[in-house]
Structure formats: structure tokens, C-alpha cells
Length: 488
Image 1 (cartoon, rainbow, N blue to C red):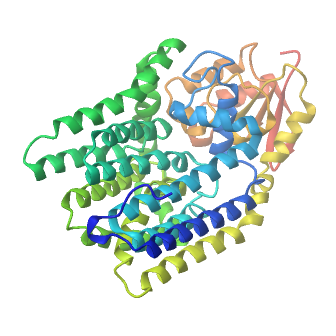
Image 2: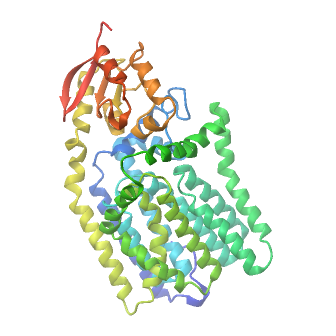
Image 3: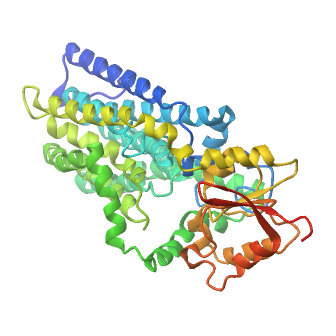
């Protein structure tokens, strides 16, 4: 099970290895049990929205993902499409598999870097953090899925450093790009790979040309696969680049004009970081860099991985708790290395206490999580639409509540399922106005936000179109449900 050997200076006794396997097995079992409790919890906004678009992918044209526009990478949508065949439960199972893989990988890489004692601590820490309700890692966010290949990429770097085989660098390159193709903020593994090659070259006082070539060749494999897909789908590469990165630049301008200043938005991370225990782990983590200073190449690489992860969390302009999942693996590894120096078992007690508090709070939050979408009106609204819709009907949730789209099960003639895309994408407002005055306008509109939310309708044109072409037939959780007038 443990694929990578620990440092030569810390070869374990067989009993130490058995204890590591036992702790890892316990961490995986506990993770499985806790996540099973959440198996029937309805999907949140992002989960439902991506599942909605993934399900429709291949049934329409107009953008990267058919009839809908999404600022997420293709591999995330592909994973959701496969998992979504099992409905909402399938999406939850996908998150469970990702969490189990992340814990196992974090433990394996930590063992290779810092030995068995650190690996056991990292297993406990990563188990708690990968099941945290406060971080939303108990669900299936893209960050949890992307963290798996990112951690595996760093593991390949460690293996290459240990045995000097270039094939591990090829694997690291493949996995680093795969992580970005799941969540575009996960440039951390790639940055760690570049820093490793530079640090190794400086240490050896000669360029690591063979290793660099292997890493680059590996990275080109998924890039080439995406190129083939774009060619087959008749989509320009520029469309993908804009969807992943260009739209983010526009979003930063939109957010800069928001009534919420940057420092207020960043503070949204503080509460979840403390409640999950991640804040404590991050405070301890720099000590891990110090304990690994004997191997400057690896210490520098791991520091770069962590720093790039922090940059990935902070660079987006919007700040949600699940962004911090990107820090789970590097923080657990480094904190494990630091806490392993506390003897006889102080580090293990600290890790166990943090994980116990996190898992207890996650289990305690289960009743709230089960009823959250019902209390917010998501499921009630979706049931109303399903009950009253006729074959051929369409819907639009204005300006967005993407999981309503998923649970309603009706197609939408408007391609944007998130409010930030409506606020950010050039021409989105004009496109909506044209749609509302056209014969293709939605049969149903859910007024989740008011027409002038975020000042999207300063002249009242959207409100006037709704008044002219629609009538309010119900109000659910104070959200008006509009139905198209048959005579207009």
C-alpha cells in the first residue's frame, strides 16, 4: 500500500510500517463512515450547477459545453458527467472517492518525505480536513477533485528525487496539468515541479535537462488530449483560455466595483479556517519546512507547493470556504513533519484532537445540511416546476441558483447559470433582454434575485419585459414564479 519509501536516514522498523498502515486504514474507514452519512444530502449551488451542465453536455451547441457557458475546466465537467449518471448520489460517491484518494496520497507522500511518524499524523489531519463541513470538503467541490492529482504530482516529484528515475517526472507533469484541467486555480503542483527542477539544477550545479524534458513531455500529454477534443468539437483554443482565465480578469474588475471591499471578502475565509482546524494546521506547517531543511531541494519544493496553494486560494477575488481545500495536502504533510518531532506522542494527540473536533462538528451539522436546500426553497421551487411543467417547457432562474436548474430538470434557453457570469460576461445582460422579447423566451422564470440585483437592470428594462410577457403564478420562499403569457 505504501508505495514510496521513507528517507534513507529514517528507515522504519516493520512495526512502524504496520502502525502507519493501521492508522491510514482507520482514517480511511472513518472518512468512509462520515461521508456515508452525507450520501443523501442534496447538491449545493456549484455541485448542482455543474451537474446540470454536465448532464446536458453533448446535447447542444454554442460554447465549450454545448448550450451552456461555464468558467470551469473540461475534466471537472467530464467527471461530473460520469458521476452524474448515478444522480445526486453519484456526485456524492465521486467526492467520497476523491477524499479517500487524497488521504492515502497525502499519507504516502508524507511517509516518503518525513517518515512513518509524520505519515500517521498527516493521515489523521488530512482525514479530518477532507471531511470538514466548515470547508465544504464533505461535499464534492472541484477543489477536492483537483487536490488528488496535485498531491499525486508532488508524490511523483518526491519519488524522482528519491530514485533518480525520469519516468516519475513524466508522471508529475501529466498529473500537474490534470489538476489544472479540473480546477484552474490548481497551478500549485506545476509551480512545485518547476521549482524542483530549478532547485535540483542548482544543487547539482548543472541543468537537469533530461528531467526537464521528461516533465515537459508528460505535461504535453493532457494538453494534446485537450487539443484533440477542441478540434473534434470545433471549438477554438482561445475559447477555453478565456473561459478558464480571461473571464477571471473581467470578474476581478466587477468585484472591485462591488460594495464589499477586498478585505471584507477575504475575511470570509477566517471563520471556516478556524472552525475546521485548518488555521492551526497552517500555523504549524512552516515548522515542517524547518525540519526538512536537511534536504534543501525537497524543502524548497514543498514550500513552493504550499505558497502556490495559498496564491491559488487568494487570487480569484471571490472567497469561499471550499477554496481552502487546496491547502489540505501540503498543510497536512508539513504539519505532520513538524508534529512528528514532538515526543513521545504529543504530535499525535494534537492531530487527533483537531481531527476529532472537525469530524464531530461535521456530524453535528448533518441535520442542517440535509434540510438546507429545502429551507432555502431550492427543492420546493424545483418540485413546483416539475409538477406544473409540460413537455417542451423551458426555465430560467434569474439571475441564478444553479442547483434549482438541476433539480427542476428543465432545459434553459439562457446559457448562464451563475450570477457572476451574468455580471461579468460581455453582452450577457443584452442577451437576456433580447431573449425575454423573443419567441424563444423561457416558459418559466424563477425570480431568485430581483431584476435590479447588482444593478443589472438600472433602467428597468428587464422588469418591464417580465411585466409585459409574464405573469406571477406563485411565490415560493418569497421568490416569484413567472409563467409566460400565451398571448404575448
